[in-house]
Amino acid sequence: MPNTASDRTIAPLETPRLGEPYLLTPGPLTTAYEVKEAMLRDWGSWDGDFRAMTAELRRQLLDIAGDTDGEFDCVPIQGSGSFSVEAMLGSFVPRDGKVLVLINGAYGNRIAQTLTYLGRDHVTIDKGDYMPPRGPEVAAALNADPDITHVIVVHCETSSGILNPLKEISDVVYASGRKLLVDSMSAFGAVPAGIADLRYEAIVSSANKCIEGVPGFGFVIARKSELEAAKGRSHSLSLDVHAQWETMNKTGQWRFTPPTHVVAAFLEALRLHREEGGVAARGARYARNRDVMVAGMREAGFETLLADRWLSPIIVTFFSPADPAFAFDRFYELMKQKGFIIYPGKLTVVDSFRVGCIGRMDEHVMRRVVEAARTSLTEMGVASAAPPAVALAERSRLAA
Ligand SMILES: *Cc1c(COP(=O)(O)O)cnc(C)c1O
Image (cartoon, rainbow, N blue to C red; front, side, top):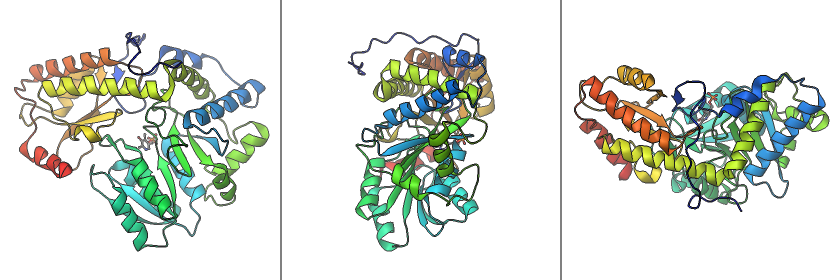
């Protein structure tokens, strides 16, 4: 029986053996030593051993997605995650289709920008830096515009860390007879989005997020009927999901040079994911990371951008302290000296920074992160970590 969050004894994970700092960033992230070690061997991309590795990777990702009926298939795509998002959009949105893009941060904006490059008609609901798109407003937009064929949503908007209400959105999309595409880049593998629980046509993620591999490819998990319909639709040779799918099914090979070492590392990362207990256990570890870190940071006087209800177990945005002695660049350097790489914020209205909860680390590490933040504040001469009043006013908009 798989371990559940409550019956797991929490042994500390190993610290990185190479003396590197922890990456408290949402990918690339801190990987296990075994994952790095898996890259020490060279593979021939056409060789039977590597073809078997590709087949195994696709099969395991479909397992994680919960494809019990064989209705979906998994197509890996070379490049960073954005390449897979672009491949999905160009392959599944017909040239005469129209997309409603739900935006509440940088990754939603990137999707709209990608559609502009592709020449695909689209409209947006833009909620600003972090307000969640809700079901009723999506339903209203769909009712008002019968030309919309697809909706695309970012599962965890990594720029603020908000976990968008995917199920609520999926329900209204299908109630009005449209199709849903999901950018689950930073959530897949740790936040459930099972095919049985939630309807969508395709979902994308990449090697270097919650599966804890190294960067080099992404993957599209899509309904086979959509994959078939995508034939001849893509604007791009290298990002044609249908062509990659067809070739992989026929020959077992990627169409162009695959990131062989990254694939080998990813299989090791998948093994560790399984060994840990799959999506539930991975999500539970990240949630503990978040809870321990957020509690400690709040105790130190920091405030989160989001109310608890919207906090993802992926990454958390904190307001920068109002104290004039605080400067992010200096804070970053002091944290780095203590072994932790944090992440600048992406809010437009107030200053902020982010701390990731994903990667090969656990609550023991998160306690040290909090301690390092406290010490860094003292070293900077920051008396209080409290944010400026304008930040708290901004946040109360979300509660309203
Ligand atoms: C990481 C990420 C991407 C992809 O970014 P790349 O830099 O291209 O890997 C896309 N969407 C979300 C939500 C992400 O977190």
